[in-house]
Length: 140
Image (cartoon, helix red, strand yellow):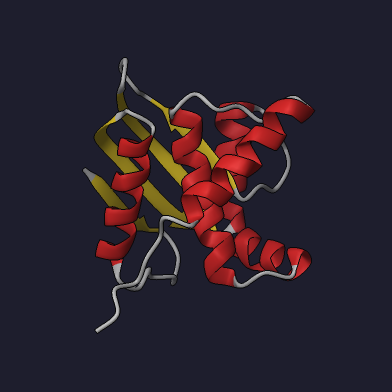
């Protein structure tokens, strides 16, 4: 089950569209959906987590804690809405696209994709693009 939690004044519109999309992403990677919690927060909230749990004193857009067991994906994905907004401006993309990129990034980590080396990062970017194309808004 995918759930959304809000520790800032941000609220995701059409949560069910995101749940459906992320479920399809998980299935497309031949994984099973477990309990995945998205926590939308601000820079200060995520910085505190970064300092406390990872011993990093830097701002970041996402931190994911992976509790997956075998092919069943479980975890907590913390996303700073402030960072996503700033990054969207820096990368000249819409806020919505940058948010989707960050959201799927966390799930892709749970699927086993890394981003520490240049080669791994390139594959991660390709997978993000591929999975973002799976997000569809149904036309009425």
